Length: 259
Image 1 (tube, rainbow, N blue to C red):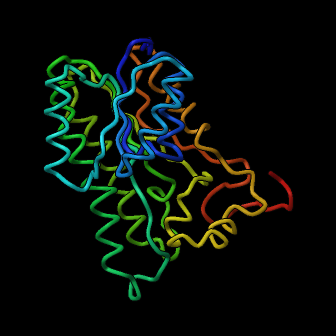
Image 2 (image 1 turned 45 degrees about the vertical axis):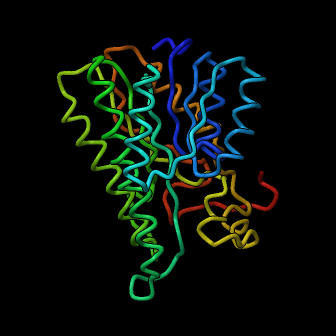
């Protein structure tokens, strides 16, 4: 896919992997549709991107947990003829790190509503627009947590296993079309992920990455570009990306001042 002039829709675009993906696609000349809950931050990021890369960037305040809002946005995009060529389902989060018998049910529901139902809502709203044109690429951002369960990960693990299953299902359901579906499963990426998980405890979040040569949002964005720019006859259905210092959730090499 030649990305110049294409339209890319990124959810959760204000920071981390989402922001990195927006910038990476903009660097290739793609127009952007950016969504997130914090419209003020989103507008600031979009202004920076438009100034640096000279591409159009539409912003929409969107909570993917709201089915009504998601489908209304899809209708608005269709009316404006802003049909995405690429959809990056990036919006997601983790809350807490408790054993299931001690878990916070409100946190469980937020993870399920965002990571699973939010991805479903956005995909269900956007895919018919792609199917009508028989063209497009959906990239779902999963996690190593969707392959291997780790202690106290329980519900977060379950949501990311669901993203894996849904990505496989999308590929089956879209057989016979020119629409590709890819799943990227990152290991340890330093974003605000851990700060969100630990309710803003930045010190605790920093400990997660201490002494590790972790991945960055740009590393994942580069992988997204690689997948999307593959030849039209190639569908990279899944890609596991790990930092060199992490081999699975349990084997992590830590060294002082390693990054």
